[in-house]
Image 1: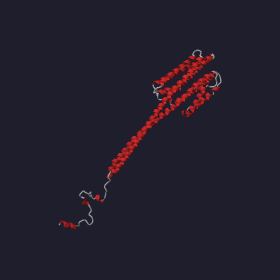
Image 2: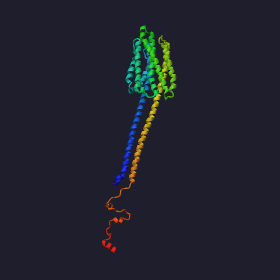
Image 3: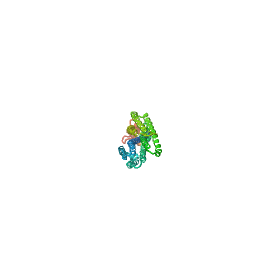
Image 4: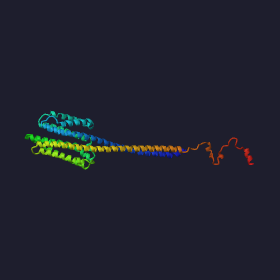
Length: 379
């Protein structure tokens, strides 16, 4: 009975230790899982945005090629320019790698098929112009699909949020509207009075679109530069943005809203605009990619830190459990065993050496005195 009582505190301590271990490990495990999954989601989202920027970067030359093809077609050149053919090839290569994951395969296939039909377009200049407008609108829709489908539209960082808006909306819209403005100016100047009444409002709307697009582009670039971790963004944007704005202004002067357009001025401005567009698009794409890559590196480091912390907690828990088991085994081996129980113990046999053991010792046969001997001693 004494054995059970003596061991009861040890059992209680073991139970308390086990309960405390569970109470520590369960919340720690839940916290670890939450932090790990949150970091993994952010890594996946950033990687998907990175793919979106790659796709949008490939689309930039396509928009320029479509603008050039539109102007060439209105001048009677049926074959698409080499810039457009190269852009289509490059976008097809990117879509082959990313299209299935980003959900752009169907849109791009449809757009590519319509671009392939440019050389077979027939009809007057206005019909050709409208056919090119429809294809350019499909290209802008592909931009919007990549922007929303990859999460770029919802990026949490101020600089990346504004830069992706420039890449996905402001730049392609500006280029498309500038091209339409210039081509509509030429159509209006060559149209009959009846057709001018129809085309003039379209030309005026294009001028307004161009001005609004350039303002939006400038505002987004300034907002990105004012709050960014990049040390090169502001410096790289200054010259390229100014060059791009000068190209737009020169083309607008050549279109001469309200008057007769100047084809030579427009041609020079168009070449300047294409050069500045390529430079500005390259700067914005590189800066956005760099910011996303820096974020991925930071999330990778955090991922490694979370994993290290989790392994450390688990290792310390295992070590603590092992030390506890070793301590229990040592205590069990050092504890004295219980006294033997038997008939002599029940009769109260004394311990050896206490001076009274002979009172309880059973007489040995042949040694115990008889009654007569005891009587003789007494006498």
